[in-house]
Image (cartoon, rainbow, N blue to C red; front, side):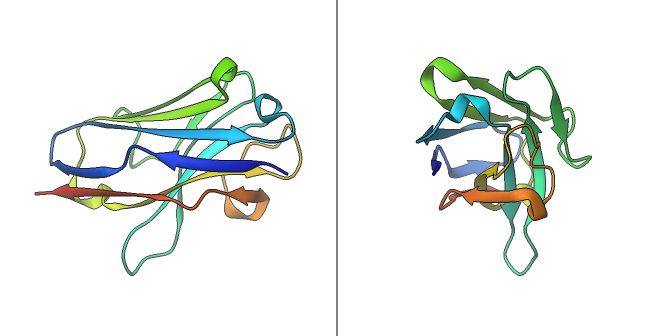
Length: 125
């Protein structure tokens, strides 16, 4: 089992920044690729960013490229999502996600097995 706990959400003005954290526990969290997804009100959950187990490969949705950065510190079992130049359309609940199969990078919901409970990000315009 892998447990994921997100934190760092909150209310921020457009143009501002937030850093989300995802702390993983159980099994060997550092051996898993990890991703971030988000779900805005009235919309389906969508992929935001992901990175490989050693952090060497990163993946981003087009809507966040150049503004968001995903990273990890395996010694702390933590994955971060640095979000800059936030826009009103970034308002959503952000979820940390991990796959069932080690080595699979979670860039789509179909390969995600473990989910955190989410953290709410609200961007005021």
